[in-house]
Image (cartoon, rainbow, N blue to C red; front, side):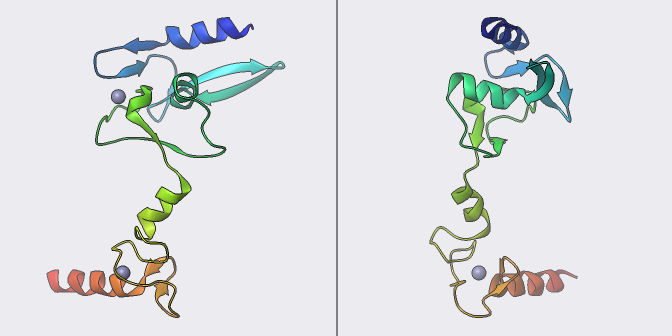
Length: 136
Ligand SMILES: [Zn+2]
Ligand SMILES: [Zn+2]
């Protein structure tokens, strides 16, 4: 299959609406998929990743691409503006704080010995635990 045919096949499966670009092809768990034969072998690609690569550019190797749920709740939407690559730094920020070495609340220094429980901040975890107990 030529590259041009592949792109046509891909674009033909997208329904462009005013808000979202909806994938009309096959889906798994709501996420669009497209199969290509590469050197005679069928490979399945995620439609939103293909779309991002097509309109925006390469996704850094292995980076998960998430839907920006504040903007769009359609899993089969492939509009690049509705997608955000989750960088490792961002992933870390979801666990740790804005400042390197600090916890998600950005309050406690996680580099101190015993400051962490697993990957979580021990102080925050204790506060969480106490507030949960208070509710019961
Ligand atoms: Zn959307
Ligand atoms: Zn903390």
